[in-house]
Image (cartoon, rainbow, N blue to C red; front, top):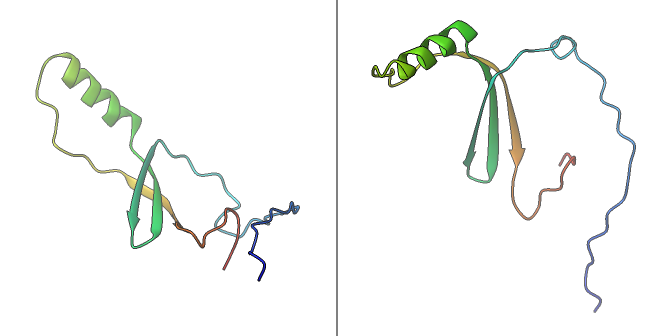
Length: 90
């Protein structure tokens, strides 16, 4: 019996934009979570004025808020584990 060997091949991949991906999105916050072999990468946007206000608050020695709200721009889900290959759709 011969052992299976991993083999890497190079392919040219061109991703065509869809209606929702044709426009650039601004993000300034990223969060990653892994659940049951799937990594969820959330890209969000927090208003710059809110971030500046929190920075001023911390600089002045005041108590910063325990949380804040932003806007979820997009979520990407990717399989992680032995059977996952970067850039491959199963």
